Image (cartoon, rainbow, N blue to C red; front, side, top):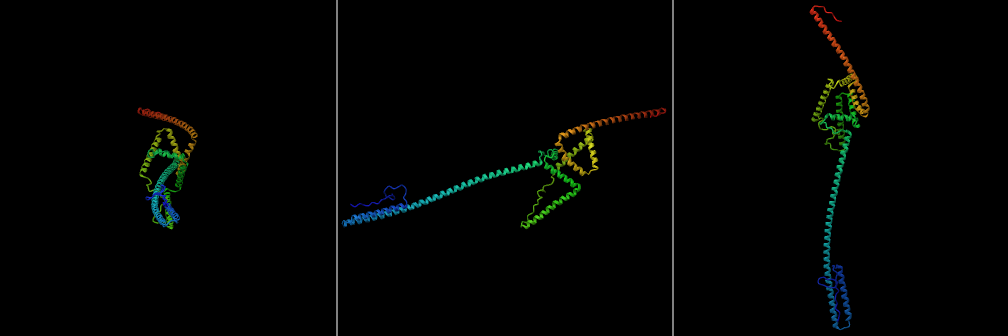
Length: 399
């Protein structure tokens, strides 16, 4: 009996069963290969059947022809089925590929979005940190500037926290002490130079002359700057309608030169000081502090009176300024030695003054006694002469 051909099915799909196939879906390339193998096997089987039945009768030839037709039909069906399955698998693979591509694109988009969000978050965090660091740096820089400014101001001033409104006299004395003791040499030197310059100019020029010169210089400098700057700005194509800012604007503020509050405080301070000076002068004149201070002030005022008759007042003022800026510093540097000699001189002066006062008191008492005796003698003589005239007896004149 002739052997019937059975195609080799290595897959399971659309109701077709064959050998054990793997769980994974075959690709288009695998399905085409299987179809070709089945076709080759069918042709080989047909040739073998033809060779085997070449000798038999015509009936056997009819059977062989039927078998060949059956094999061809079966191979064609198998090929069609394989092509259909391969087409389905190709479409499914394309669909899977499109789905995978879409999922991959979605995942890529999600990853890009997440990455962008993370980058934005990192940038925001970094920017926030940078802003914080910048703000901290700015704060530290401002604090450092403030400390430097305070240090420079303290170096220039070097004064305790004294308020003019609370205690004007202490405020003025503290500033005068700060200047005359050269607690800050730069500040004291500048102030001394300004005072000497003012006194030197006052010796040659009148106050009206100085004020007119200052106004002329300031106005001339500002006019020259405005003209030159306007010409330069026009030459370089600058805006002509914008006003020119003067460099003296910061030194000539728009605020009042002397406010009413400051004027009232200064006037009150001057009034209090004038009353204080008059009260002390009255006590010295009336010797309320004692005879010794009055004699000392008397000697000083007499010496000043004598010197002022021969020396101009401007030179006396310059001498007073130089003495005020030199004597306190010299005294501070040699305080012990100067105090020792001053105390000795004070004791000697007190002794001489006491001796002179005692001698003056003694001479004054002697003169008073003599005057009293002369007065008594004169009274007695007048009484004697009056009594003699009354009684009519001559009066003997006394030598």
